[in-house]
Length: 360
Image (cartoon, rainbow, N blue to C red; front, side, top):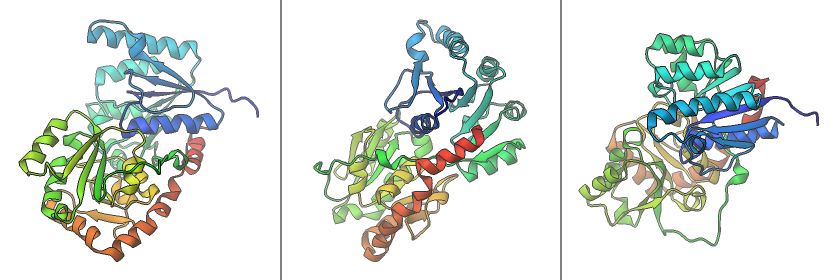
């Protein structure tokens, strides 16, 4: 094979728990299989996921004792690393919501080819204010890559960009590891992901679980993850007197044994991007109940086919959906039968070809 001289830096906040971080991990393997020299550059020194290629942690290398000095030092380190390693492609996977930081960062990127990834329907996370600057910044990119059609539509409408494209998040089904000898709870439904109330809306989730009364039929709710709002979740559990029926497990980068044995998984987010937790759950054959939030779930879930899609911010409807998937055996079996095949188009091989087509 002829050596590929292209050198790509995937720049992320970290490789810690989270959907964007999992995406960066998968992308590094995809690009490495394309015979590209991959450099994973992370701002903060957190690594939970495996990666292909090399790793540069700006968090380890910077030694400034004050936050402001550390940020400056990380900028210098990034600039030096890109030059020394002759990086010619940049895939920016970070949140980009600070105007000053983005001006400096894009000066560091210079004339290199650039692709910006947008992971959330909440545009404030990836587009710094004012909007006209974001338009100026992004219209110079090779592509603005949106992980869902809903995000791309919003970005085109709000910023009048002509260089957008949708590439869904993939999943490497071969990396799903299930330890058959591991036993978990007898009957439960499950959420796995970040503990972040503002985005994930655990208040709705717990209220719907309470209203469904499926815990009286022996079902528990398993929450697996980590994040800043664990205390808020625990307070809501106590308020609803669900301490006996809700179990909290820490983040696990290989949650698939639990997902496989769950009756179904749930998502109640206020907004999303293209939630990998839904893809992973369906890939294993576990149906999903999700709110129809902006954006992603309605591009993955076909209501009544591989799960249930529920109007957002309505705990009574979500509770009814939970009860329905527990009680209606025919519906449940049909959704379970269709789950895995409904996400076959998101294989690493298929999505890899889409990335290859826009990079070259």
